[in-house]
Each structure stands twice: as structure tokens, then as C-alpha cells.
Image (cartoon, helix red, strand yellow):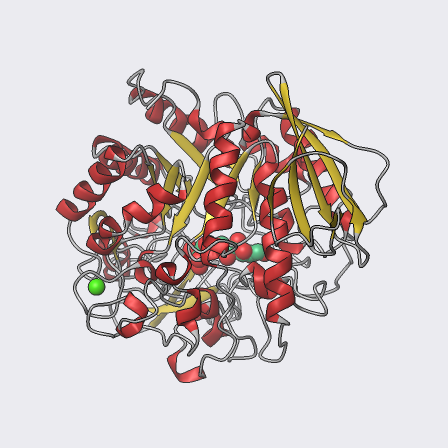
Length: 570
Ligand code: ISL
Ligand code: CA
């Protein structure tokens, strides 16, 4: 490891533990499974992994409902397995970022169980947001907030004496009670959790719902928009169209009294001090990355400061239409917003909450669902989607800053659009009464081998979600070493990105190409790389320069076909 600020240009690969690799054959991915597949990540050429939650949890929201922040859930393994994974990753020069879920605990957490057993007004209740209901008998929720997964954001408890009692706030599922971050005990406990994992050697934290921890004083009613996980709008009362932000960001942000309150920044400043305690001068800069659905990007940039977080996810590409002007706006807006605070931006095309980008980009109508979750109906054009996805990946990996990859995108995996309702597990699906397909379709267990049971995901052939037939064609062993495969494209792109230090480069737009072509140069040291992405419908002539890599085989007639990106010398 170098002593540099590694996160500035890092390619960070998201592992979703339950779907990555199953070591013990119960059909659920686990930590030993991840360790056994680290060579895949080393060969891919990523700088770090981000592990979605593997802590003790009833798994009602796939681990984003933590019952014990200091232990590994038995389905994923043990603390020793976590130590072994961290050590094995470090041996390969791969840093490890873990997920921290500070906005809410699981309702199974000892604190919440104690709160239920205690009286209103007790210190046990004061760690969460318990309030008396409105109405004559307290039968109405304390305010009108809606859960991001659908329905009221409040659930009423039965008091220990058997009478109907107070309500508690949950921005997500009712099994995810929100913590009260104005309580010093909550702050101390989570800082101690940071230290617990830092002592085990992690290199950083991805902070879940980073914009949500602090709520407006008095928890006032709100008649604005709540952008739901499905991209629809759960706003109560009169809706005003917020319009598309001018910097091209998602339009799917959360705003209102439950999000992006000034007080959150104070929390992250003290976290940063905790991380800096562990600055060893070798693996310097343990990093914090905010998952914050905040806009405009200038507002997001406020999470990324010298004394705060190093990164925030830039979700803009999740909602960008296949249109060169739209991408140009996002690139320019993102670089400007983050340059202003002296930090690199991040680029995200897929994650465990949104439709995989090969499917998203194959949809006829890409504008209707800002957060990318399918209704049951749309059927993407998978061939077109994959072609565009490869082009999108290639120009994204050339951009200055840090890039996040979601497991399976290096295999070109599409969304599983045909999961039967009775196997779905996402609470967002259940709480919307199945009106939306939910997020299971991007969480299907990975195919490692075309030949083995469960495509090599599990030694027994079990898989917690069924894999589509035909998944074998995407298997890692079917693509490794095959020229033109998506896996080889990713490997080549990451190798060139590292060799040519693209993430650290400066971007300059190149004139003289049609409007429908993204054309830019990345300058690094004395060299430059020309990137051309054809988002139009006609081939365009290529300049007379050596092609370093192209997202799809070039025809050899000196043109760049539609839906293809190429990197060229100079
Ligand atoms: O409201 C949103 C967008 O408008 C959501 O994207 C929301 O901010 C997001 O769903 C938060 O996601 C994270 O926390 C959730 C968990 O279910 C997700 O998997 C996780 O990524 C609750 O912990
Ligand atoms: Ca397992």
C-alpha cells in the first residue's frame, strides 16, 4: 500500500455478501465464500471492496437492519472469518470498506427490545424516536411522514401493561426503528462501533442513509415529496414539481424535515476524528463515503470536506437518459461541484438498490423511474442494453475521480425481470403491496461457472434466489480469457486506467464531433487519452490514432458505430 490518498482515484467493487459466493452450501453467500473468490477481484484489478452489511441481523432488509454491530451474522460466518477476509484482501493489495448503518437499528437490537420493555419517557426510549400519537386517544401517527418503503413512517407499540401506546419512527421498514442522534449515548455507541472495525483493520466505511440521521426539530409535518425507493412519489398533500436540477443530478433525492439537516455534518466531523486516530502513515486516510441522496450536487459536496467525509456517491448516472447532452451535463456538473471542495467525484452505474445498468439502458422509456426500480411490466432489450452498458462503463472508467462497481456488472449481468413474487424478499416489495417489483432482481446470486450446480455459486446447487436459465453464458469461467467478453473488457479497462492514471487526470472536452458524441481528452503527466462515445444512431469517423480499447469490436472501416465507446492514444 502507498501512503497516498488512495480513495481519490480508487475503483471500489461492491460485494453483496449473500449473493457473491456461498462457501458452506446453504445457498446464501458468506464471508468464507468471498475470501475464496478474492483472486477474481485481484485479476479484475480493483483497488478496494465495499462489503454490504454482514452483521448480526434478522435479515428483514437483507442486513440493513442490524441487531449487533459488533458481530457477524451466523449465516455469513464469524468474526474470525471477517478477520481472515480482511487479511486476505490486504495480502492482495485490496482495501476493505465496510457498510455502517447508523440511521436505524433492527427492531431485534437489544436497545430496541429494552425500549419496548421500558416506559414512555425512559432513557431506553430516548435512544429512538418514540412519540405520543395524535388524536383523542393517541390513535393517529405523530406526524404525516411516509416510509421510503411505503406506508406510514410510524408504528404504534403496545405498552408493557398491554395498553395501546406510543409510536416510533422508521423511515424504512417497521423493523428498522430510527435512532435519535441528538442523544449523546447514540453518538458514543456508534463511534465505538467505528473503532471496533478500525481495530480489525478496515480501511473505511460506507455510511448508509448518511443524509437521514438528523431530523428537523419537533418532527414537523411535511407536505412535500418523498422520493421512494421505487422512484415514485409518496408525498402527502399538494405536490409541487421540483423540476430537474440543472447539474443533471438524479431528481430522486430525499428532501424535507427528515433529510439533509445541518446537524448531520457535526456527526461526520467527529467520525473523521475517530478515523484519523487510526492513521498509521502507511494505510493513511481511512475513508468515509456517504450514501446520501441529496441534490443539487453542490449540496452533496457539503458532505465531502477536509474535516468530514472523503467521498459521497454521485448517483447522477442512475437516471441519465442515453443521450450525449445529458451525460455531458452530468459530467461537467459533477466535476465542478466537487472541484469546488477540492475532492474528486465518484461515478456509480449500478448498486444493490437499482436496476442493473444493462437492463436500465435497454429500456425504451428510461425517464419514468428515477431510482431505476422496475414496475412489473417493462421488458428491456437486453442486447441493446448490454451494448450501451459496456459503452457507459468504458467512458465512466475514463473519468477523473473514483468509480464504484457492483458485483456482476463485470460479467454484464442483466436484471432478473422474471422472479416469481413468492420468492421475492425485499421489504420494499411487500410494503408497496407488490405494485413494484422491488430490488431482488439485481441481487441474484452470481454465476461463477457455466457447468456447476447453481452456476458455481454454491457447492450444493442451492441459491437463495433462483438464477435465470441461461445465466451460464454470463459465468466468470465462460468469459475469462475470451476476447471481447465483458469480463475481459473490464479487466483491460481497469489495467489501462491504472497504467495511464486516468482517474487522476484532468478532463477537456474535444470539439468537432457531432452533438451525439461524447468526446473528451484525459490529460495525465505528459500523455493524453482520447475518449469517444457514440450515443447517436450513425457511425462517426475515428481519428487516425491507435485504439487502446473499444467497448465492442470495431468494424475496421475507421468508424465508431452507435452505442460504442473507444479509448485512443492522445
Ligand atoms: O429514497 C431513496 C431514493 O430516493 C432511497 O434510495 C434511499 O435513500 C435508499 O433506499 C437508502 O438505501 C440504503 O438504506 C436502506 C437499504 O434498504 C438500502 O439497501 C440501502 O442501500 C435502509 O437501510
Ligand atoms: Ca453460506
